Length: 272
Ligand SMILES: NC(=O)c1ccc[n+]([C@@H]2O[C@H](COP(=O)([O-])OP(=O)(O)OC[C@H]3O[C@@H](n4cnc5c(N)ncnc54)[C@H](OP(=O)(O)O)[C@@H]3O)[C@@H](O)[C@H]2O)c1
Image (tube, rainbow, N blue to C red; front, side, top):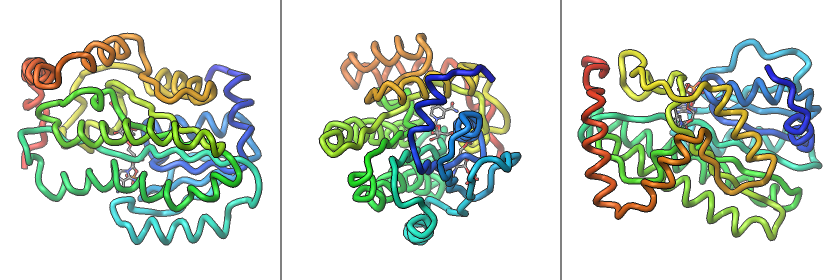
């Protein structure tokens, strides 16, 4: 791992770091960077399974939480309020999320509704329950949205719409929150190789390649440190996001459908 003093100093500036979905992928890499910074902050992970291999030097607590369940979120915040240090800035990273591929409502209504809950309802609920504490102590909210949030995306219609919600909500919250000492950033990765494909219903990796998780997280942390309101990691992704966001939405959807069909992703979909 590259030693990056500016990111280390930025992470050391918080007394409490709360992350969702650090058991895998982008969240796990963010947690590694937090660990590597040597921060003295109390670090909490919220997900269904605990992350593995955490060093004993990190003040780390895993709080089991299924973010599709509002009651779990309420219970976990009660727990957080008991365990969190009472002073200092708070960093909240809403990273948990998953995708879905196929003609609506594939891969199924249950999967689709759970995805809406985890990708949109949960970050709003969790942030709302911590908002007053964050306003009084100062801090930052980082929401992991997606490049897919910049345009309507057929065959991933609901997933892309959840990320469009998260992107717009995040940028608006940033404008509101800054006066109260809370900034907010939407992190919008393009394809990154993680367990994402499997969770989205593919048998194996779709081979779309894209960024490494390390490169994605490095750029995201730099943008968080600079207090930006949004970041698309990777210059090719940035270019794509810039262009597609400027097209009329129906045209972007038509082009998107043609491009996604060309990828022949159906061959990777898990058979029922
Ligand atoms: N990889 C990509 O290409 C890509 C691109 C753009 C955006 N993103 C976004 O990046 C974020 C992280 O995804 P990833 O690529 O790192 O995928 P990943 O490796 O599958 O990780 C997803 C994380 O979300 C957590 N999660 C899923 N359902 C949950 C639930 N019901 N309750 C609590 N936590 C839950 C998982 O933890 P448990 O299973 O332990 O609960 C896991 O830690 C997601 O929001 C995703 O939409 C990914």
